[in-house]
Image (spheres, rainbow, N blue to C red):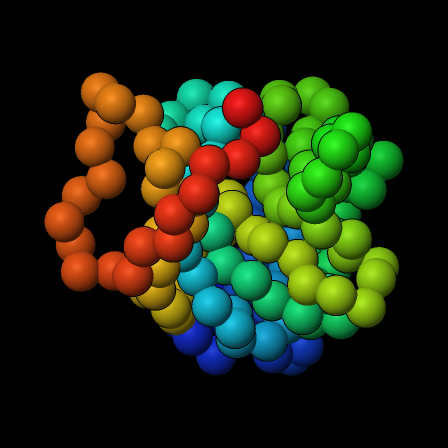
Length: 147
């Protein structure tokens, strides 16, 4: 199973998996930040009004099993690559896991509490009119993207 919430490390990683279990990921350090994205890409990718995820350094993230089942969609104009399972279509993370930057992990794939709560909402001008952004006190960052 997974590590104690909020304290993932190489010895006790926070684990996650796609819907069918073909791909397993591990987070090896605490998340740097977390929040909701309301952009059209996240809406279309998840089928929901927003996507909740956390940001971690790429060096603190690894694909533990099932790399052969991963596929990537690289947006043609801007944005991070989006990684998903070829078998179940489960979206797991964004970014370059073997790079020097960061990886955005979808909280829905995690097996345990990520140890961090959402801290912001971004691209709120892209929020769907039938699903208003809740008044939850989180900072909001406007703009719309990727229509």
